[in-house]
Image (cartoon, rainbow, N blue to C red; front, side):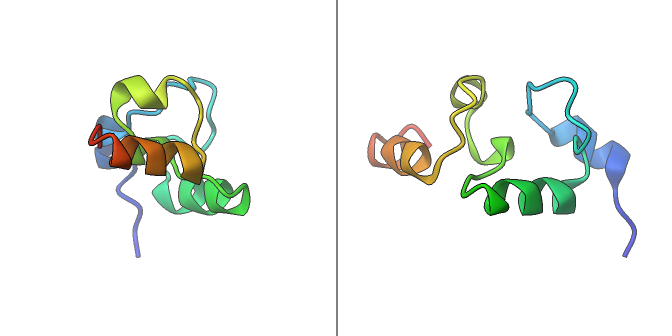
Length: 67
């Protein structure tokens, strides 16, 4: 399977600029799940900028109907 790197980068809302995984979704997802987190694309732009990628933060945002 080919990576759609350029297409993925256009849709990636990760604000961590030196990220080596930007646009490489399979690596990003694997990295964050190992850390018991979700990738930035699971969050709104405002929530992503907090860099709190925890499952707890995601669940709180869902309960508050912010996602």
